Structures are given as C-alpha cells and as structure tokens.
Amino acid sequence: MQSEIDLSKFWCLNEDCPDYGKRENRNIVFKEWYGKNNRALLQCKTCKHCFSETRGTMFFGLNTPREEVLRTLAMIPAKGSIRETARAARHDKNTICRWLDIAGAHSKEVTDYFLQDFNLTKMQVDKIWSYMKKRDKNSTNRSSGRKIV
Ligand SMILES: [Zn+2]
Image (cartoon, rainbow, N blue to C red; front, side):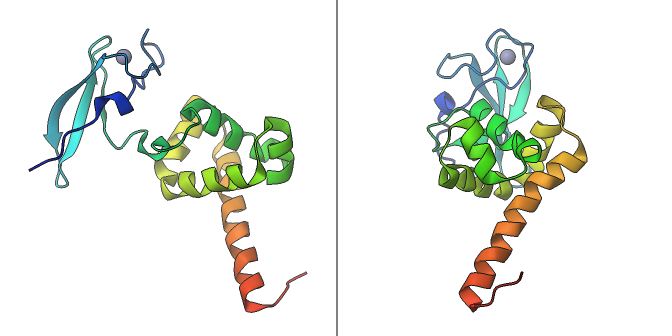
C-alpha cells in the first residue's frame, strides 16, 4: 500500500506556467506511479507539465521558500565564503550551512536547478559544493585534534 501523497507540498516547476511556484493552489494532481521505487508522477493541471515527486523534495520541512534557499546558496561563489553570504543574504550562517547540507544530499537535483534556473556555470556550482566538502574536512580536523594551516 502506498501512503497518500500530500499534494499541498508540491508546486508547478515550470517557470512559464501561471501557477509556477504556487503552493496549495490545487493545480497539482497525481498522475501515476512509475519506476522501481514507485515514485509518484505529478502533473500541473494548468500547464500539463509532469514532474516527479522527488523534484523539490529537498525543501520539505523548511520554512524558507525554495527560491530563497537556492538564491542564497547561489550567492556563495560570488561572495567567496559562507560568512559573507550570510551577511549579504541576511540569513544566519548556521542556517546556510544546514541548507548546504540538505542541498548536498540532493546535489544532482540542486546542480540542475543552479545550472538551469540560476544560469550558474558548472565551475560555480562546483565551488558551492566545495564549501560543503571544506566544512566536512574542517570538522574532521577538529575532531582529530589536528589543525592544518
Ligand atoms: Zn504548471
């Protein structure tokens, strides 16, 4: 038995659609199950655009809109550090780190967003991910008690 899909958590991902990004607008309908893992295929009634339930899932549970999260993370290459990004975007540094973690868990999906929706280059996107890796390395160093200068 599949659990019910909560359609209010989804929104149309087609930017040309008049209902793009609108939540709880009732324009999203369930279309069918597909694939080995029984993913839900959803459809926007307004523009007939179909998309998988996995698109956009990274933003579930966040109080910040998808656009804001991505816009903030997309600033990292230009700002050069998480601290500067936090200052410019007026978000807490820890919040941005958390978003980076969540985004990193869906890095393929998020990379697509950055490349398509934000017109970032592959190099800039790699730079965003490098901050996540850098931070991982730092915390490893700290726990082992060594500091690499
Ligand atoms: Zn649509």
